[in-house]
Amino acid sequence: MAVLKLTDQPPLVQAIFSGDPEEIRMLIHKTEDVNALDSEKRTPLHVAAFLGDAEIIEILILSGARVNAKDNMWLTPLHRAVASRSEEAVQVLIKHSADVNARDKNWQTPLHVAAANKAVKCAEVIIPLLSSVNVSDRGGRTALHHAALNGHVEMVNLLLAKGANINAFDKKDRRALHWAAYMGHLDVVALLINHGAEVTCKDKKGYTPLHAAASNGQINVVKHLLNLGVEIDEINVYGNTALHLACYNGQDAVVNELTDYGANVNQPNNSGFTPLHFAAASTHGALCLELLVNNGADVNIQSKDGKSPLHMTAVHGRFTRSQTLIQNGGEIDCVDKDGNTPLHVAARYGHELLINTLITSGADTAK
Image (cartoon, rainbow, N blue to C red; front, side, top):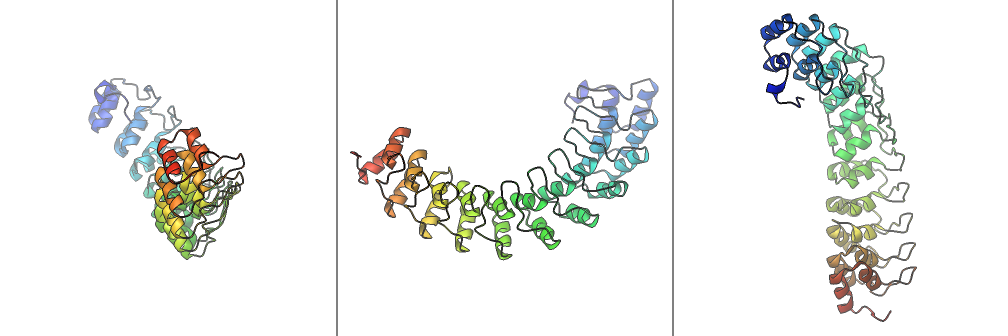
């Protein structure tokens, strides 16, 4: 929290960091300003709350410290105390009328902060004072979203027990389940589903929890969702399946799992690209490409603009992958809608190794 070196801080702040109540009392008695602001508009009370020091918080408040002072980020001492996970500090602040509904610049309340920071005891103190645990922050996320995103099982349990809306969605229509799946928090995923979370829920772009987990390589969550019988070839608004996203992001373990489970390796998206097109193009897709080819992917399938997977390797200079495709029957002189062969494309992008491979493999240089 301290931006300045401690020795450059005012004596009162130094004493708070030292945890010395007598020194603090003496400084306040010497008319040290109990509400002095630093460059971030933080008060000494923010410092004591950040440290979770209940005794010093009490001294400062009784000496006139403003309980609900807001810093540059609009964080109050209560936000700070919750982040420190000090139940005692939170209780002292609330006893002195700290605002449990105070919002920071991201519209986050102390409960949001508690949920993100595993501060279960602090949440237990705050929740009875709230009219609702489903308040949204600026991104539309509730405390449950934050708890799920951070993998806090105990916090998720508490919030659900206190009436959290399990299917609340943020501004992108993502549920807590999307975030738990994306982050790979299997225990939270299982807990949410057991409590009735909609396993087929979609966000604004049509992403399901399976899409989320697959795109980020969360193999255990992918396995769990597949075992529950979710639709493996469900598409998002772009027509992409979980397999497309796993290939795009080079998540080979997930690709292996999805193909073993029977995912359609030749499913075209809205542009006609199959998972193999994505594996041919993506930075880390080499192993994904081999897995798809070994699982019967059509190496000559063309997108709506006539691009084959070999064209995609030519665009992105994926030398080894071009060889794999050619060895597995990739048509070397296949033309796209504009009449370009992979050799034309490789030449345009200046991929010399690829140009040599295509020529030595028999590409027609006269085309």
